[in-house]
Length: 241
Image 1 (cartoon, rainbow, N blue to C red):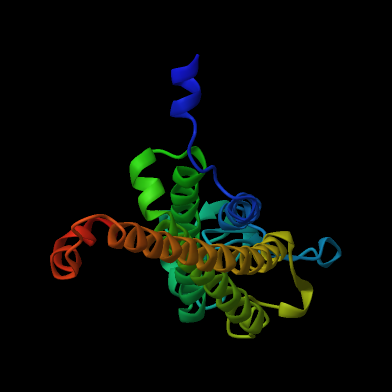
Image 2: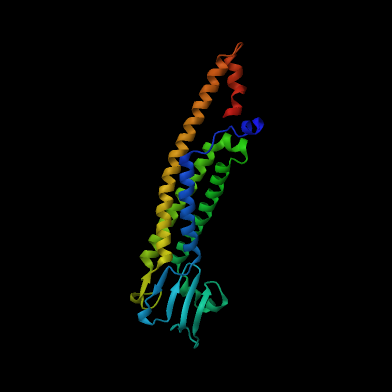
C-alpha cells in the first residue's frame, strides 16, 4: 500500500491544462462534424432547386443538368467530389478557392487531433519521466497546434463565406444559404481560439516553473562541499536543460 502511494506522488496535470484540453476536445467534435458533413451550403426547400446541398467533399443534386456539358446527362443523388459520377463537371464543382478552404480545414483537423494526442499524454502522465521533464515543451507544442488550427479555420470560413454566392459557381445563388456545417466550423475556430489562449498561459507558467527548478538546482549545487563552478557549469547541469 505504501509503495503504491509513493509511486503516485508526482505532480498532476494543472486545472488550466485540463480546461485547455477540454475546450480543444469540444472544438474537435464540432470540427469533425463540419469536416465530414455535406451541409456547408444548401438550397431553400421552397425553391425546388436541382442543387440540394454540398460540403467540403460531397455534392447532392436532384436531376441536375449542367448547361455547359455538351451531352445530355442528369446528375442525381449525393456523391463524393472525387467520384467518377462528377468527373465531367469536377472542374466546375471544385474551384480554386474551394480547394484553399479544403486545405485550411484539413490542416486544422490534423493539428487539432495531433494536439489532443499530446495533451492526452500530459493528462495521463505517460510516459511519466518524459512528460514530467518536457511538460513545458509539450504544452507549448499543443498551444502552437491549437493556435494554428484556429487561424486556419478562420481563414477557411472567411474564404468560403466570401465566395459562396459567386455567380460563376453554383447556379441561382440567391436560392442558397450557408448551413449548419459551416456554422460548426465557425464555432470550432472560436472555441479553439479560447483554448489557445488558455494553453498559452499554461505554457508560460510551465516554463517559469522549469526555470525556477533549474535555479533551485543551481543553488543546491553551489551549497555542496567541494563545489567547483567551472566543472559543474560544463557538465553537471546539462541533464536539466
